[in-house]
Length: 270
Ligand SMILES: NC(=O)c1ccc[n+]([C@@H]2O[C@H](COP(=O)([O-])OP(=O)(O)OC[C@H]3O[C@@H](n4cnc5c(N)ncnc54)[C@H](OP(=O)(O)O)[C@@H]3O)[C@@H](O)[C@H]2O)c1
Image (tube, rainbow, N blue to C red; front, side):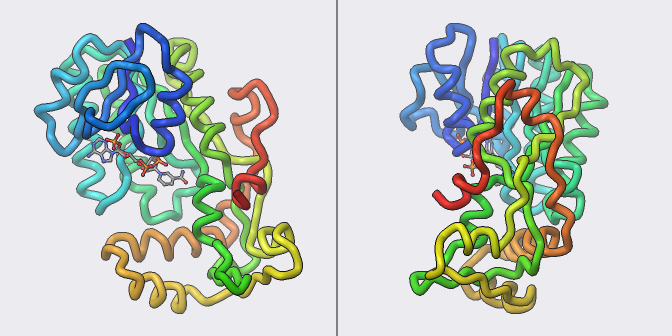
C-alpha cells in the first residue's frame, strides 16, 4: 500500500489526482474532512505523533511530502516524528520530497538535509526527490503590480524553475515503482532558467522589471504581516537566485518524466 502525506497541499493534490482509482493507495492529511480524490484517507499530522503509528499501519511505501513552513526545529521535529513512526509501523520504503542541491544556500535547506540524513540512517529503503523551486513560486515572487512593474531583488539572477505538476508526475512514478528507485537521490530542476527580465519581456512592453535591493525587499516583506520565520525565508530565496546559485538546469527530470518537461516560463506566467 502507498500512503501520500500532505495530500491536500498543492503538490499532494496533484499526486492524489493521478493516483485516484488505485486500490492500493490511501491519502494522509491533517483534516480528512476535506474533499479528496476518490481514495480513502487517514488523519496524518506530524505535529500529533499519535496519528502516525495507526496512520501508517499496513503501508509499504510512504510518500513523505515535506511540511516545510516553520522554524528549523519545528520542521525537523515533524519529519523525525514521521520517520520514527514509519520505522515502528513497518513501512518498507520512504520517498521524500527534498530540495535541489543548488538550494544549499537557501534558509530552509537545513531541515531537508537533516531529513535526508535521518532517512539514510533509518531501517527503511529510501528515495530522495530533490525538487527545484516551483515556477509557480517564481510567479508569486516576481508578480507584476497593477501598473505593470515587477519589483523584486533578483538582480540579473535566474531560477531553473520547475513546474509543480512535473514534480507530481515524477513523485507518482517513483512511488509506484519504489523498489526500482531505492537508494537514489534525484535532482529535479527545470530546463529553463528564468529571471525578472525574462518574465517582463514575456508579458509585453507594458511590463517592466525593476530590481530592488534585498534591504528594500526585507522591509517590504516585514511590513506585509509575514511571520518572523518567513522574512529570512523569502529574502534568502531572492538572494540565492540573485547570486546565481539557482540557475543550473538539467538533472534527472526529463529522464524520470520520460518526456519533455512542461514549460516553466508558461507556468511562471499563468
Ligand atoms: N520547491 C518549491 O518551490 C517549494 C515551494 C513551497 C514549498 N515547498 C515544500 O514542498 C512541500 C509541498 O509543496 P506544496 O506546494 O504542496 O505546499 P502546500 O500547498 O503549502 O502544502 C503543504 C502541505 O503540507 C502538509 N503539512 C503541513 N503541515 C503538516 C503537518 N504538521 N503534518 C503533516 N502534513 C503537514 C499539509 O497537507 P494537509 O493539509 O493535507 O495535511 C499542507 O497542505 C511544502 O510543504 C514545502 O515543504 C517547496
